[in-house]
Amino acid sequence: MTKKHDKLVDLVTPSRPTGPIAHRVKGMKDIQPGAYPAWEFLLQSAGRLARLRGFERIDTPVLESYSLYERSSGRTSDIVTKEMYSFLDKSGERLALRPEATPGIVRAYIEHGWFNLPQPVKTLWYGPLFRRDKPQLGRYRQHYQLNFDIFGEPGPLAEVELIFLIHELLNDWGIEAQIDINSLGCVDCRPNYINELVKYYKEKKHREQLCPDCRKRLIKNPLRLLDCKEPACEALAQGAPQLIDFLCEPCKQHLVKVLEFLDNLGIQYNLNSQLVRGLDYYNRTVFEVVMPSESAQRPLALGGGGRYDQLIESLGGRPTPACGFALGMERLLLYLDPHKVEVSQTRPDVFLAQLGDGPRLKSLQLFEELRQAGLTVHQAFTKNSLKSQLALANQLKVKYALIIGQKELLDGTILLRDMESGSQEVLDLKRVKSIMLKRLAKTK
Ligand code: HAM
Image (cartoon, rainbow, N blue to C red; front, side, top):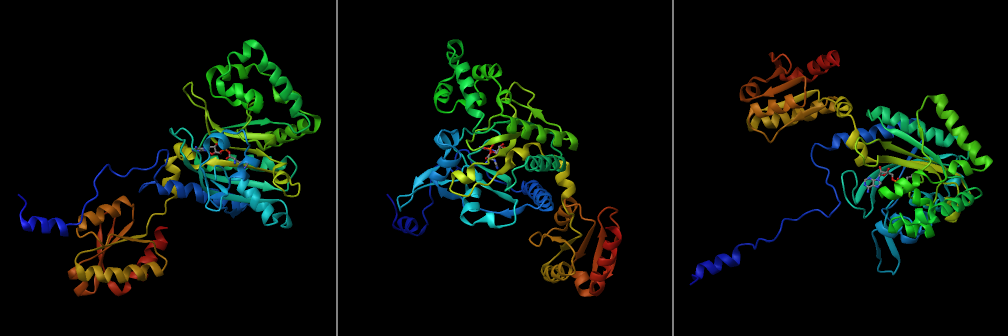
């Protein structure tokens, strides 16, 4: 039998929710403590190199209208047909979480009249994208990209500048990847090639080997047959006619110029006739940054892009040539040289350690004083033991620790500890700022 006061306890004890632990949505990733320095390193280095080359940072909304992607990424592309997160807004408009950045950037270019700005307009965009893809290592349902785009430059130098930037970035990050290049031709020469390609795949012995998806592609988007990941389709693609043999003279000349410039700059590339990209808007040069894999698996793409001279016009803008590329942050992080991140980390100048309430208060004031003098100061005001505070200082590779206890507080002094040699000396608290500024100027 329940006693009366047990019931009372039941009434006053807040009910605890029970059930399975909350978990993240499939394909989503958390960035946990300790992981951010690598992200920051990539972003800072990309921002610095892009700024030097005249790229300006822009941003676009996470939500766009669904039709924007249908009209740009492609009605038959995997992104639109299989991977978009979309929903009906209360207004009845179908909206989508952006699966890629290019359509939103182009919409902004048209909507805000960026063609009135001095051309070429060069933009750097960074943000999260959403694709309901099959999750695996390096493939998530939310991923982050760095996008670099150039608007208003029709000549091959635009692609060369982008590929050169990729080359510089990879060097900065210590990533040894391969740059694949192909040309997709233009509205004049591509149809002839597509006819030949369809003829090849329609041959009975070839068609029988196609996967179900590729049978649909043969009708809806034959170029994508070259990009299928199924082993039988991959083998068939090897023997297919090559687009490069069907390029019209202007497209051929454009490609030759791009390759000549890259040769002159000493940038290595791999001509890959099967590179078609998964998005509908590209013409002429397309490229991908790939990490050749040691196993039989397909190489992982760290980034990709190309020219999209008709996209702005097809979305209602005035005809404007454009090209760009995007790098996938999560994939770059898989290959980033950790040493580069470590070297990029600024070591704090001083660690402030304290023992007891009075010293803690004093060190809070001193922390602000030293910080305002331009020093990078670290502390662990919530820790009580000196041992654990110094362990943290060691971990942070700080050169000096300043230690203040009850005795020092009473004497108006502070202990300066050289963290490398372990030697200690007593300093006058009033002079600590000027002494530290002098010492650090010497050691920097
Ligand atoms: P994309 O090839 O679809 O191109 O994506 C660019 C890069 O984003 C890929 O090479 C890959 O590194 C990364 N990425 C794509 N999907 C995922 C995923 N599910 N998980 C992790 N990383 C992923 C575009 O999006 C074009 N809009 C690029 C562009 C910019 N073209 C012209 N300007």
